[in-house]
Amino acid sequence: MRLDVAFTPAALAPATLGAATALVIDVLRASTSIVTALANGCAAVVPMADPEDARRRAAETPGALVAGERRGEPLEGFDLGNSPLEFTRDRVAGRTIFFTTSNGTGALLAVRAAAAIGVAAFVNATAAAAWALAAGRDVVVACAGDVGQRSLEDEVCAGLLVEQVRAARPDAALGPQAEEVAGRARVYGKDLARLAQESPWARRLSNRGRGADLAACLRLDTFALVPLYRPNIDKIVSPYG
Image 1 (tube, rainbow, N blue to C red):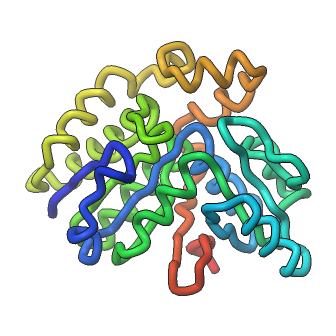
Image 2: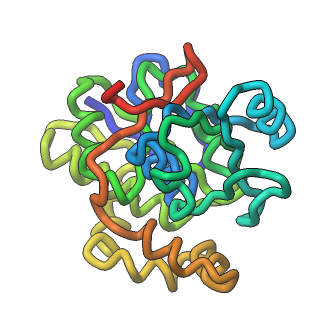
């Protein structure tokens, strides 16, 4: 087994994806929101690149919701933004959500060629690592980053996943980026709250009054569910059907 990490979608090597399991991370906040939505009974999340396409598809789908943000701000006329606190059972249970964000949904679309795709965050890190291990393939961890730049919180989460997989499979071969993020995980893994101050994007969210979102996103193993992106049906769904 080999573990590789891409710091941004642009760093992905498409030729390696077809035989690999991909884990997509956007800790602040898309992957955390997707995990929360599926855990709260959402029927499916459809990742969309364009807000207008998301709006149109939602309007054409009975009972659907449209959700998302750009640069951290909710989009005008959308039902939901990108706060995991919005994706409550009362709001999303049984609904399909057409979802578009600055970084996370783009990262999901970038790994469509992978053999299997899971959505990971701090809130389901242990479950995500176990799911990737069970597949028995090489693993590619795709960080969403921040509009093409590296993201500290995504890399720390990637490092935790790498460390968990390596603990179970000491023979796993790590690419250089995987080794780097494993080191970051050892620095922050026992004190994720530090990221609220040391991550640039976390500080921006805090300055915009999103401290409660940070608290929700920087928790470890809140959920045991790993949402699965199935490009053949263009949906992210629960593994439990």
